Amino acid sequence: MNRNIVAGNWKMNLTFDEAKALVEALNTRVVHPNCSVILGVPSIYLSQLQALLSNESITLAAQNCHHKLSGAFTGEISVPMLQSVNIPYVILGHSERREYFKESDSMILEKVNHALSHDLKVIYCCGEPLSIREENEQNQFIGNQLRESILQLDASDMANIIIAYEPIWAIGTGVTASAQQAQDMHAHIRSLVKDVYGDELAQQTSILYGGSVKPVNASALFSNPDVDGGLVGGASLNPDDFISIIEAF
Ligand code: PEP
Image (cartoon, rainbow, N blue to C red; front, side, top):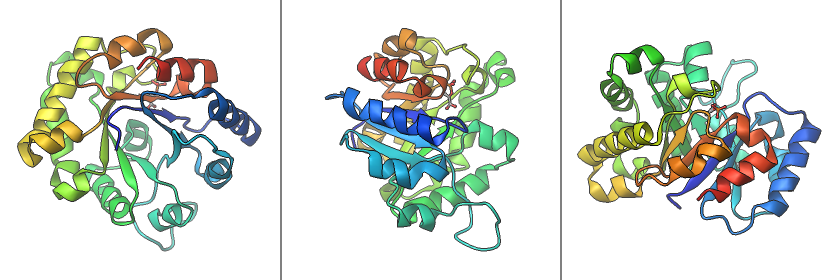
């Protein structure tokens, strides 16, 4: 896996025609990027957008999946369903899922395990709320989140995890962590991975920053040694902004 990644998270935005126009723009305008590009698109569009993708640098991610493999869960989407339409990635543990849908660390770990056992790679999100940052407790908080979830995986599974550090106070707020705050946390996360899995796997793990990444701050963030790219919400909906962020590498 390329350690440098720019992933978009479209969330619950765009009609199909808008989504199609965005993929068509990215198909032609993303040329020789220094990173892999992943688009987290609404599930209803996954198959159709997959068929429209013609740029080998770009792949798709689902934004969620259910924590059970099948059953009476009206409206939900399972890991085997994603696998059956060849979706390579799923975003799990996003703070919006944790907050609005009450997803617990154990539920997220169940999802992670299902995804990995069906050959999907996982973009696993972690991040602290503002109150924790104000108390300077962010390192302990993130350590606990990781220990309750992905740090329990076998090394072979951990190799298929991309970590996205997304401080909740920076998501959709226009407030970005400073380049130094991002680097400090990413170095901390890499050291936690190293403690459990050793240096080689820690060095191979992509750790993305998310939280109001924009063209204006992307290169300062990505130039840090432990920031391997971004998970981009709002700015991924605009092709000019998203391409500028990709070109920041
Ligand atoms: C996100 O939702 O993952 C995100 C980082 O959003 P934004 O870039 O809009 O802050």
